[in-house]
Image (tube, rainbow, N blue to C red; front, side, top):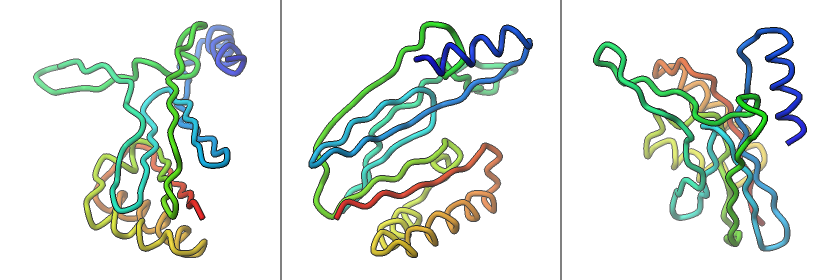
Amino acid sequence: MELNELVVELRRRNGVAIGCTMSLILLIGEDYYIFHVGDSRIASIDKDFYQLTYDEVNVKYVDGKEKKYLANYIGRDMELWLNTGSGKNKENGGYVIGSDGLFHQLVQGDIELIRNGMKSKKGMQHACRKLIKEMRERGERDNISCALLKIF
């Protein structure tokens, strides 16, 4: 919460419109704990692909077009609401963590790429690089980040 207050103060002092999202997963033994704000995402992956976080956005229509605006992010207000979650790690499962640009145009073939990449450290690095490249080629204009975590 201290980071949030620092960003709010920086915004006010310098008159700049800045902020950031955060999707954090903490793995402790057999359990995971999620701390989330904004529209970055965490998904679990094993035989299924399941999004564990939800985007915190407001939808407005401007000139007949849908526009999404962040409803919650670090630096928005002094009082930050932080969404949390927890659960059990699945043996041989893993997690995909990324900014919303990674997930906007994700298709089944991408999920298979992730699943196959989770077999090794090099495979995970390759999968992330390939996904980022694919999203750019599909025309994604939002920021794109990717991290894969594997449970052994």
